[in-house]
Amino acid sequence: AFSPSRLSLEDTQQWSQSLERLLESKYGLATFRNFLKSEYSDENIEFWLTCEDYKKIKSSFRMSSRAKKIYEQFIKVESPKEINIDYHTREQIKRNVKTPTLHCFDDAQKIVYGLMERDSYPRFLRSDIYRTLLENLAADAAK
Image (cartoon, rainbow, N blue to C red; front, side):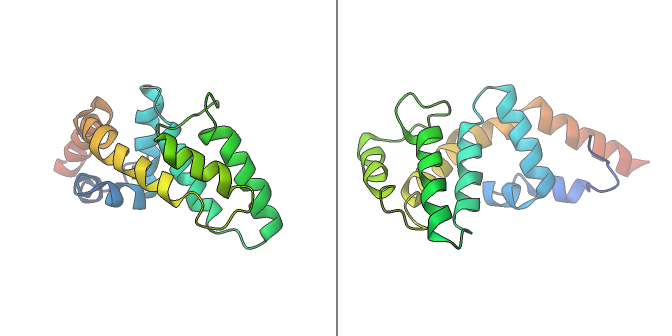
């Protein structure tokens, strides 16, 4: 549950400036994830967040096991959370995870970010979830 005292109308309005702004906000990210879950398309944000975590890995041993996991979960055809990327990128990642680097998912992450930016993000801004939140905060602010 959101506590309106922690979340300001101004902050929430800023989410509509850019997807980047939205994802930088802890609440924004949580709200966006809930929205995507509600329309069964949260694999993109899950993949994006997983990549952000992956890039913080320091040990090559952990990198290797995580890269395989990410591949199995998001990249492989018919994987449980298969993301929508082109054949070429998929094949490239398949090769890269054999000797992974911090950047082996960058291309896929860019594609997924672009998809969210063009597709789910505009839908989010029009969604009841976002609109209701704004209305509630505006009503609180007016008190």
